[in-house]
Image 1: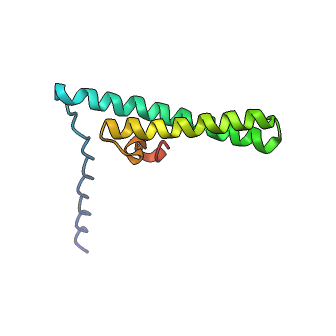
Image 2: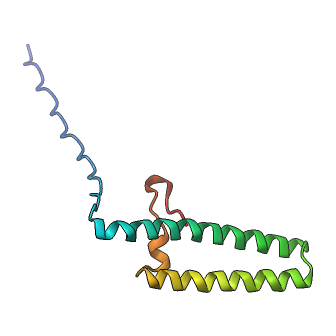
Image 3: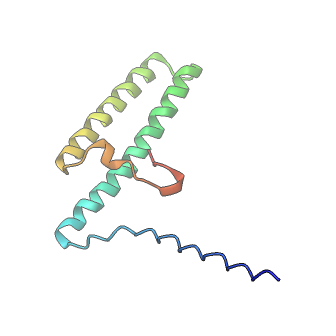
Length: 105
């Protein structure tokens, strides 16, 4: 009679991913809020730009509307650069990592 086979080794549990720590420094809370607000503004700016390009390609705009829209988008883009610099951020800092969903922007 053969001896009973040895039980299979129990695999080690997978390491639990570590969550990022919250920085609750009162002096830096404003920086995080500014980053969040600028992220939302950047998302809306990009959506407006895509909508404008779509309308331009479809021929929905007059020449005057194209000029005004193009100027407004350029000014908004420039203002975003100014606001990011004012808060010590780059445009890359506004691109939030959504984990398995990928990046926001």
